[in-house]
Every structure is written in structure tokens, then in C-alpha cells.
Amino acid sequence: MNSIDRYAVFGQPINHSKSPQIHTFFAQQTRQNLIYQAKEVGADIFTVSANEFFSKGGKGLNCTVPLKELAFQFADKLTPRAKFAKAVNTLVLQSDGSILGDNTDGCGLVRDLMINHQITLKEKRILILGAGGASRGIIDPIMQHSPEKIVIANRTVEKSIALAIEFQDLGMIKGCGFKDLVQQQFDLILNATSASLSNQLPPLVDNLLAENGCCYDLAYANEPTAFVRWGLENKALKSLDGLGMLIEQAAEAFYSWRGIRPNTENIINLFHEGTI
Ligand code: NDP
Image (tube, rainbow, N blue to C red; front, side, top):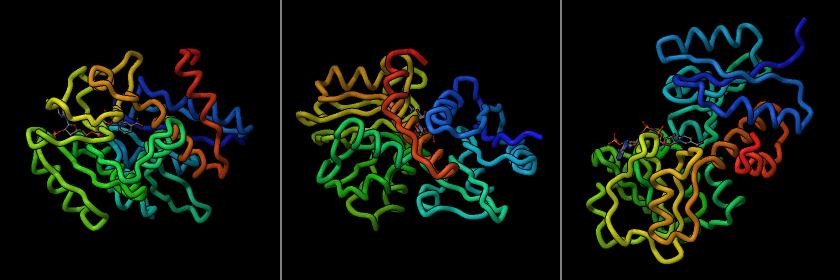
């Protein structure tokens, strides 16, 4: 009988996923007896595949593009941060057999910014580019650190305005289009569009980044993304990609599953060195 606890990431496409390497590294580091595999699962077969996974003894799942909204619906219960995000990236089998849905993306971003890169959020002017699932997941975790304001700019302007209205009770949050950013400056610009995945940039106006401001692309790649390059060209103090966020959201999921928090510093260094 196989006594190894099983975990997996479902998504489509999935062959680029670094999650199996990350969780295998965490398991070795914390001496946890588990296996973690990636499986190509599209939206059409998600519910059947997730039910099968848990009915065969699976303990936890990560869900990535395009499954986060479906995972939100699949969960029996939700953490407050998953409710806010209306998206789930982590499913956790509970002792009573129910499935808890969590969203660790926003927490992963904030940990990477604040702990790994010492970028503070308090009283900062923060611009979020994009109004998709990732933007939705990061607004509340950022607002918890009392920025001066968040502006959400999106290509489809109605979406950024609707998102800002939805979160308006949290503080100063405004939605707009890219052209409306003229003559505004920000201390931190977060690229939560998927433009970098096709090596594109959102249409950014000049002088958007304040002196000593920082840029962060939620996307990551082996080479600097178009937005990371834009940040460097615009004299960002730091211009970072989303690898650290990926690793930190994974560490948070691992903690939800195993009750033990892995040390992320070593693995971030190993990825940067290209060792893994
Ligand atoms: P969605 O598909 O939900 O949203 C995509 C967003 O990007 C929309 O706002 C869309 O605008 C905008 N967009 C797409 N192409 C362009 C373009 N060429 N110019 C301007 N805007 C564009 O994606 P997600 O929110 O799920 O993901 C966004 C990014 O965040 C991806 O790069 C993803 O890889 C990354 N991510 C990283 C994570 C990490 O751990 N590092 C975790 C989660 C996400 P419109 O509404 O007008 O279509």
C-alpha cells in the first residue's frame, strides 16, 4: 500500500509549470513524505478530474490558468481571502472529508515584496496594470498594508472601474484606462496584465514611475520580461519579475497542506542561479 501523500497542480498548459520542482524541494527541506505532480487538465474536465483525484486519496491540489474560478466553485468552504479574490489556487482536503478553497497568490506577492525585497507598501501610491484574476487576488492583501492609494488601469476600462468599485470599502481605490494615467506618478507599479507572456507591454505613458519607485511584473521568464526591462529603462530602484511570488504562494499552499512553512530563500537563489 502506498503511504506517500499525493498532491498535484492542474492547469492547461501545464508543461512549463515549476510547481513540481518547488514542492519537491520544500518536501525534502522539511522532511515531508509526499509526491507532487503536474497534470494537464482543461476546464472541460476539471470537476471530474478533481473529484477523481480526491476520491483516490489525493490530499491537496493547486489550480492554475484557466481553472481558478472553477476551483472556487468546486470548494465546499472558502478562506476569507479566497472569497475576496473569487478565485482559488489551492484546494485542501480537510479531516472531515470536505475541500477547503484558498487563494495564496496575494499573500505570495506581498511576502515577496516586503520580506524578500524590503519594498514597503505603507503610504505608497500603487498602480496595478490589468484587471483580471491576478489583480483581483492582490488588492485586499496590499490594502492590508495601508498604501496611500491603489489605481487599477486596464485596457478594457469598464473592468478596472468595476473592480475598483467592488473593493472601494477597503480604502482609496480607483479604476481607469491607461491614457488616464497622464501626469500621475506611482511609487510601485505592478504589472498584472498577461502582456509579458507574449513579450508585449501595456501602453504606458511617460514619467509614470516616481523617483526611487519600483516595478514588479507578476509574470516571470528566464530572461527579463518586457515590463522588467521597461522598469530598468525608467530608472526603477528595483525592477523584479514574479518568480518570488510564485515561490511564496507555493510556500503558503505547502503550509496550508502540511502545517509547516518551508524556507524560501534557498530555492529563490537556486532558481536565480539556474541550478534548478
Ligand atoms: P487574466 O487573463 O485574468 O487577465 C489578463 C489581464 O491582462 C487583463 O486585464 C487583460 O486586459 C490584460 N492584458 C492582456 N494582454 C494585454 C496587453 N497586450 N496589453 C494590455 N493589457 C493586456 O490573467 P491573470 O490575471 O490570471 O494573470 C495575469 C498575469 O499574472 C499573467 O502574466 C500571469 O502569469 C501572472 N500571474 C503570476 C503569478 C505568480 O505566482 N507569479 C500568479 C498569478 C498570475 P483586458 O481586460 O482588457 O483583456
